[in-house]
View 1: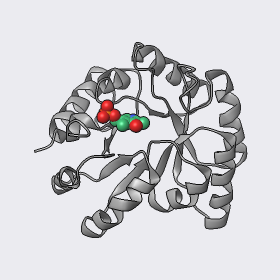
View 2: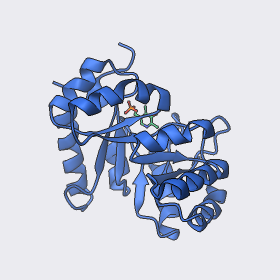
View 3: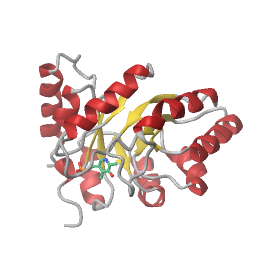
View 4: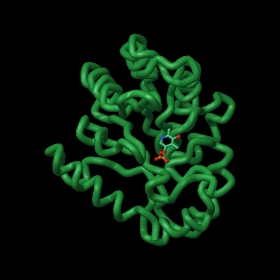
Length: 217
Ligand SMILES: *Cc1c(COP(=O)(O)O)cnc(C)c1O
């Protein structure tokens, strides 16, 4: 058995504690790097919403699972190179890592060509970390406006807090930026902090190791 049902129970409790509606939070089971048998087990338990952080890795394993299991819903949560955008929009229902104008432009061109576009979350580098993707908090309003001007389906904002800081501060900042831009989607919270994220308004939590076990074991 995976940790799936335990995490689902904890999400339900956190929703209730925060006065959120049951089912208000979507759990994305982050399957990156996990052995195939662990992913297969979660699919067999009936779960269908998964997150991957690399396009190529996802292309290597998900087409076969999608033949075997119907209704799989894949979310891209990691950095997207512009030259992989076409493959990404073919495979993923949702992209959580739109982090720069050039990528937004490419997504807009593909949306025009295809008449469809995945749902998008814009990544905000709330910790202003040089090595981390995402627009700076001060640039976020402008980036939201630019994406809307390109008619992109912006569902919300996403962040990955710095490892050594209190995540609640970053979740609260992301929620504030989203609210002032009229965005309701908040992709925030991982294995170690998803309950905190839910208390601060997360609509999508991205949980990997707490469901599948530690990566690389
Ligand atoms: C790996 C990853 C997660 C899941 O991390 P866990 O700590 O295993 O829950 C969530 N979000 C992103 C962007 C990731 O890369």
